Image 1 (cartoon, rainbow over the protein chains, first blue to last red):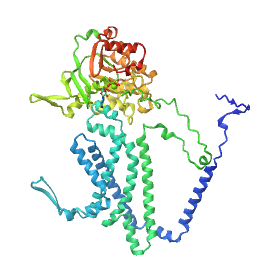
Image 2 (image 1 turned 90 degrees about the horizontal axis):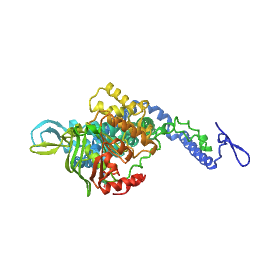
Image 3 (image 1 turned 180 degrees about the horizontal axis):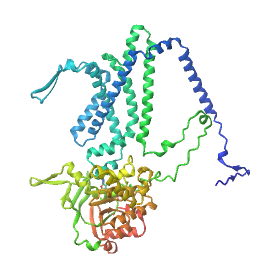
Image 4 (image 1 turned 180 degrees about the vertical axis):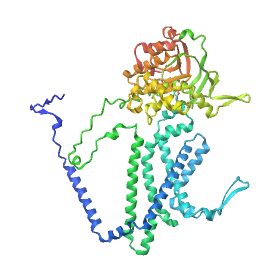
Length: 329
Length: 271
Ligand SMILES: Nc1ncnc2c1ncn2[C@@H]1O[C@H](COP(=O)(O)OP(=O)(O)OP(=O)(O)O)[C@@H](O)[C@H]1O
Ligand SMILES: [Mg+2]
């Protein structure tokens, strides 16, 4: 197949035989990064005040583990309730019935605007404002009634506070995801006779997921760390549990490191999960994304040589679809 | 087909339909009558309201005046205590299910396979059993020449292939009428013919079609009747044979002459 051509010097050219190019600035940059990394490692290993033996001793301490479990539980519950709430509020913000739109915008304005710490304290002290919680006919007879003190424990206050706060953020994420879906998709769904609900659940929401997932991953991680706020209302989360220990033993630094290790571990797991979910919802969108060559190894960093991608099967139909051509409006 | 037109009944009808977008009067008293089995082509310069008309007929846009009927049933509104009022969403959805639509930009659902794009409406809104819907979808895919693409995703197809899938999707639930809004305008020239061929074979099955198009040859050859719109009004309509050979209005004559000069861009000039 290949018919090598010749240069003016009579040299036979075939780029397959090219030598990698030497890139001096990459060598300089790589060296600097290596030195910095080495220093950090040396600091972590040799600094005795970090007391790694104490870290190891408490890493799997039952108190710490139960704190970790509570942190994960609160994160998941907050995220699930927050996502459902956020989706409903996002749909409400895009409703064509103005009062629904207003109330949803008001919700977002309030719960995104008040610091979560203040919200937690507020919910925890709800009984002060509302001694009894009552379900009944508005301005009419009561059907059920509870004492707010019985209903609001640190746990319920934490769940309510975190979920409402999360719901406000999630609604903005979901709303931007919905707006990113081509309006033609909604037209097509309606044209097929889908109800508003079917259109939203089957066509709009699945496609908006691609846009929703990445910021939701960040949101999940922010919430994981945000649960540390519940220690102020005496909830036994991860941070609270190490605080309880170092208040007794005064080993503040190593115990905070215990918490750090666990936070980083869970965040890493979450990030890996996020990548998988992104790939799942990205299917049918970009065929190149999964087959793109990986760049950035040490070797390619220094030489700039990129492994050749596998030739794509068949001709690349549909990639260069011209969509603007018919848009004369 | 034309021979039976006189006896066949009206499927879709618009009477004095008006539609406003803010200050713009996009439709200004449009009358249209589509008989069973007919192919009606809607022609006209850009901005004349062709897309708006088909979108209104399919109730993707609400209308501001006039009335539209499908098989004699008032679209979008119902009689109520001696007057009329808007129908419920469910009623409107039921009416939409009796029509199909093919869009300029295809609008296939990219997150579903080709097969699911076609089976979803029959299964989920018409209650057809999955096996039956599947068999019909495969048969339709075969008819549009894409039997081997059932499991592909829309983005893996060329524009022409996507539009043929979109046509199969619109046909699948057996609608009373299919509306096409410039089905070939977003396609590269070499892909236009494959879509027109599918539409032509569809027309020969006797299904009622309303086709907004700039493809004069297609309109002349396949359409039974042609409608010329400009400025939100129907300027002229008639059987396609006379429509092209003996235009009655000056506007249609100059519109047609721009095409016969072979300038496809002629459509961009406001009549
Ligand atoms: N959603 C909208 N909002 C505001 N104005 C609109 C909207 N849709 C259409 N119009 C206006 O209505 C008029 C008719 O537009 P329409 O899209 O129906 O024209 P068309 O005949 O389909 O043109 P083309 O051949 O370019 O597709 C135009 O003046 C257009 O600007
Ligand atoms: Mg148009």
